[in-house]
Image (cartoon, rainbow, N blue to C red):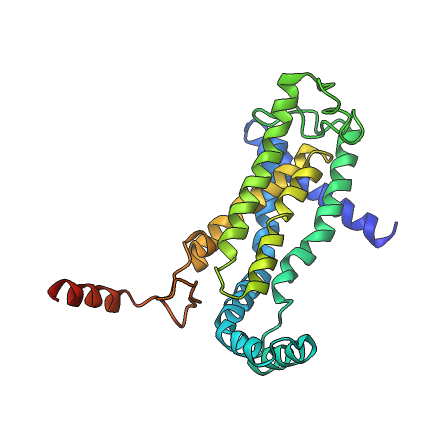
Length: 275
């Protein structure tokens, strides 16, 4: 047995142990709750990396004013701009790829969980549903790809198809919210463009969610909800707040070191009313 197969076996054993433990207390939907418990354990184990990601994100936001200065200084020269930007990151001790670590670490877990769920489904352990979900192994345990849904009408019937579509839709919605919370509005056109491109990721995950076992999609939804709660308590709503504007009407960069001056705004308003 190679290392990869051993890793899949560890995940399958962990899920089975959690399901047996939960089922031992007489709790229904033991396999669904086992996947949720497994997700929370993974999120707790990767929390140091998540905190590193948030610190890197805050540091990048704090450097936005300096980056804007470099853009003006090296306007039209992308090579010099790139070199100056990397030097700025190096001096500030910021790794622009630091925010990718949690996702890179979770990728092998996703793939291994995918294989583990198929192995458990072959043993008939995931035939039970989870609330509205008909089967945590379905619909791909009986249909290849999107053949259960397309062409219309769905091969599984409309009622079952709608039940299987709920988790993929929740995956898209929850991931959009998490991404908007982690992205702070920026006046940098290049960064703003990248932020817009990142909004395509939830829809890609939603498409994949239609072609994998519902157990894996339940993992994604649970992970997103946990990240949403975690993000709220660490950095607040982030990009869900409207971007502040300058006197000229352009978006202004707001960082933790440069919060909006609400007191000054209120005093300015009082002076205007006195005049």
